[in-house]
Image 1 (tube, rainbow, N blue to C red):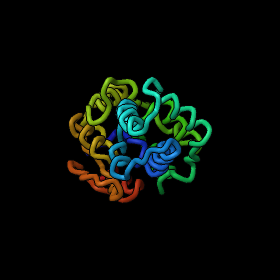
Image 2 (spheres, rainbow, N blue to C red):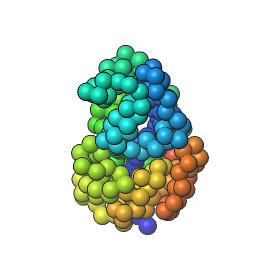
Image 3 (cartoon, rainbow, N blue to C red):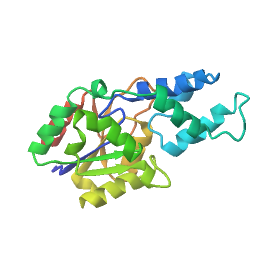
Image 4 (cartoon, rainbow, N blue to C red):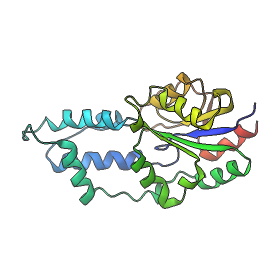
Length: 217
């Protein structure tokens, strides 16, 4: 089996960012008198910006706010003042070294993330990880992000490779489903915190650097 490219999800795979994102969203709504449960926050894991906006509007309506208020504009302003996240300590163990070693083996690297391009830059640039990826695809480029497979189909097209030459690395059920639907074998990062089923993977790993064993098979 020759693997020519590894296509990585970002949140949860490269960066352990989901708990920080959840806390930021929880705090925003708490500051505006709205309680959002852990179960509700878990529905956001691996979601697109459009899905988050849908849920934000739904949760915002729980309190007597002006119905004409643009909740996303309020959230954006609040986040600029209160919601900064330092992603550097959140990089998952083994990620920088593994990316270096995969590149040294001649394995091409890509990111396929539901996060916006700006969000991808904010998470990966501070740790100098973005330079490793020759292709970066964001869910904001599509009318539907994961579990729709278009993000992976597009990423493979930009790499000029067929599914049998690539693997995806995912953790969320949305992401795994997208990869499988695109014809990819998926290495699944085990994640017990968000009630994922994580079904459909070809491999299951606990650390990012375990990819080196898969690629060398």
